[in-house]
Length: 119
Image 1: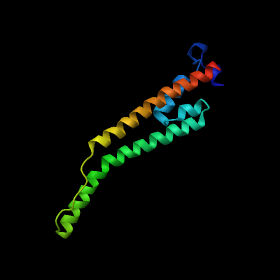
Image 2: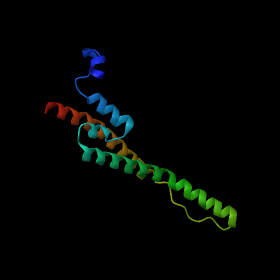
Image 3: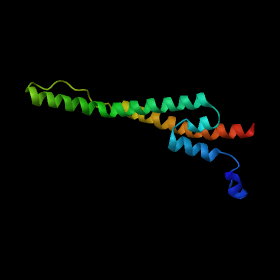
Image 4: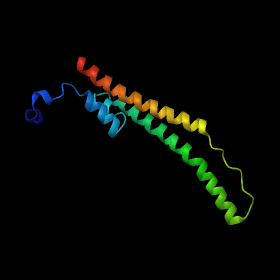
């Protein structure tokens, strides 16, 4: 129905831009689902969410343990306990994995729709 309202020259011939946009802004893996590759889309979604959660946990955990140690010292008056050092290496590795997975997701969404169009 919408195709009748939009002029032919403005209608996209393929859905590559739509798949890329959906994967970029809605949910990683949604572009693969749009192309009919549900398991691949689910794998991208789970992989991205787990790597992003790992990044957030690694970023927030050391300041939380320091705050807990500071509160224990303030309340009990005991000597401060040892806290975990801030692990920049693991934070950067998890951030790099998240960014690589996100970029791979966008390229794969473009390729999956393109492959579907060729068939």
